Amino acid sequence: MITLYTFGPAFGLPDASPFVIKAQMLLKLAGLPFTEKRGGLRGAPKGKLPFIDDEGARVADSTFIRLHIENRHGFDFDAGLSREQRAQAWALEKLLEDHLYWLAVSDRWMNDANFYKGPVRFFDAAPAILRPLIIPLVRRKVRRDLAGQGLGRHSEAERAELAQRAVAALADILGDKPFVMGNTPCGADATAFAFITAGLCPLFESATRTAMEARPNLIAYRDRMMARYYPEAG
Ligand SMILES: N[C@@H](CCC(=O)N[C@@H](CS)C(=O)NCC(=O)O)C(=O)O
Image 1 (cartoon, rainbow, N blue to C red):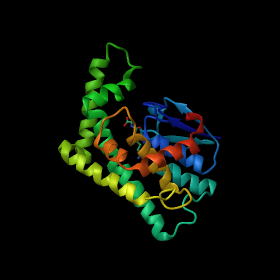
Image 2 (cartoon, helix red, strand yellow):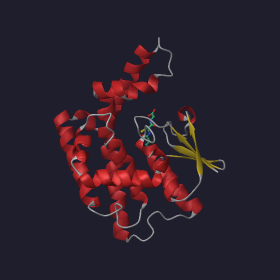
Image 3 (cartoon, rainbow, N blue to C red):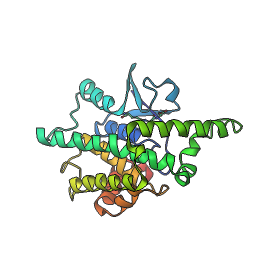
Image 4 (cartoon, protein in one colour):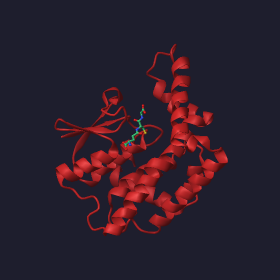
């Protein structure tokens, strides 16, 4: 049995992290039974979640979890896609993971109103007396990460422009298809669902959310994927 290490449901989402939601979706798409365990960040092989333990094989990072499922369990997420479609699906996925994700980090962690509605909860387990010290330290680290990645160097208006373009690309690629690449789900649907669901989270104000709310196909996609893959949430 596979164990998936998660943060746990938060903010009305299946998990606080879109990468954990993606990993849940990959396991569901592959039809592999799994259990979830929270609180494994300290023992995470790469210091981040998600990671899985598959009968003793520990695999960190959602993309390597996908490759592990493909190699060890012989499941091809993109079966039925042409080479060109596989490439497009991969490119879309990485747009979300390596670009839109950092906009979400900025929205959730750097915007005070969002931070105090959301990520501040991550510190609930810390002793109350230490929180005023730890919280600014961690937020400073996130600010440095954002500057290192690059998106943290842009103005809010510039980030909003990038969010609008990324969301437009995502919505236009999905179009009126049931899944991102056609009539059957593929690997990129795990990522697309994760990031659309996280982006539409009503708790946080963001340019990403505003742009997504203006695209009915993204809302409908989120709703039907949620009903199909997370029926217990309905
Ligand atoms: N490339 C990784 C990204 C995972 C990731 O960024 N996880 C974040 C949460 S969204 C994390 O665990 N952060 C904890 C930390 O940096 O301390 C993947 O695809 O799994």
